[in-house]
Amino acid sequence: MVVLTTPTLDQIPLLKSAKQIPHISYVPTIDLSKPEPALSIVNACKSFGFFKVTHHGVDMELVERLEDGARVFFSLAQSKKERWAAAKAPMGYGNKCIGLNGDMGWLEYLLFAIKNSAVDQVSMPGFEVSSRMFCSALNEYITAMRNLASQILQQIANGLQIQTEDVFSSLIENEESDQILRLNHYPPCPRLKSGVTGFGEHTDPQLISILRSNSVGGLQFALKDGRWVSAAPDPNSFFVIVGDSLQVLTNGRFKSVKHRVVAPEHSSRLSTIFFAGPPLSQRITPVPELMQDGEESLYREFTWGEYKKAAYKSRLADYRLGHFEKATYNQKMN
Ligand SMILES: C=C1C[C@]23C[C@@]1(O)CC[C@H]2[C@@]12CC[C@H](O)[C@@](C)(C(=O)O1)[C@H]2[C@@H]3C(=O)O
Ligand SMILES: O=C(O)CCC(=O)C(=O)O
Ligand SMILES: [Fe+2]
Image (cartoon, rainbow, N blue to C red; front, side, top):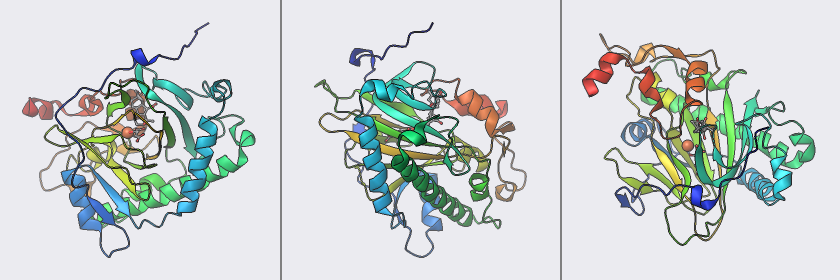
């Protein structure tokens, strides 16, 4: 029998104290109520790989209901939460262990697989029955996030002047689209030393991720020059993060952005992230309409299912796209 023990604080690594500036003075911010946000979205994706959306139309009462449900869940006795620990690993409840390959962080979380725009009951048997209110908030939130992600992906296609407006959004609107909802809870970290890893540096493998947190900070993004910048928390807005798959679909015009979370010292951080992925069978290859004459794909052909499988065998900080880059491109870069 495998006995799983919860890691102690001493086992959680400190974040590498790379050159840091405390608060980014400029987070690209897109007001979705203003006309024609497409070009600003594309510019933010090209220059930063992340941006924040305001006036997004998501019902904040729903967001509060979800956050209340999450707070109630995370305050349950450990033994009750552990009931969902082995649900369908890595889905379900997790405590300090991230993924299946030894990554650790100062957090606990719930990971839900999504099927047909709702929590997949197979990945969390009995969860809906245990908390119907929480589950209906989760499902309504999933629908809201999927709509927001679709809207943003359509704007990206417009901003890139692709005639087929739904070229990206259709990938996440399919019944078979492979999506995940993650709720992360970072309790205050008792150690006075700062820089304990909440969630270690990584890129997200999907197309885009939509992140919302309470008012407790900790989220940092890597800039292109390697500096880490803290993004001030903004509970009324959503951060949009470019993932590896969108990097490939745009043939490297957009780059997936590295991000991480520093464990909070005094208050609990609660975050919710929707990962918008395509169906497992979807080929991930640059969009033909985007390619210029003679331009070749920088990547070997692969399906999302193949990429996901490889990603889930990797460590959090690994450069996962490396295996899929064409050798010629690798040689040119080295
Ligand atoms: C260490 C890992 C955790 C992760 C799967 C992986 O092997 C590498 C990618 C990780 C990541 C990052 C973004 C999302 O939080 C996530 C759910 C995903 O799809 O890829 C996690 C995976 C996880 O926590 O299981
Ligand atoms: O919790 C956060 O704010 C970010 C977590 C994250 O990047 C992830 O779950 O992939
Ligand atoms: Fe992430």
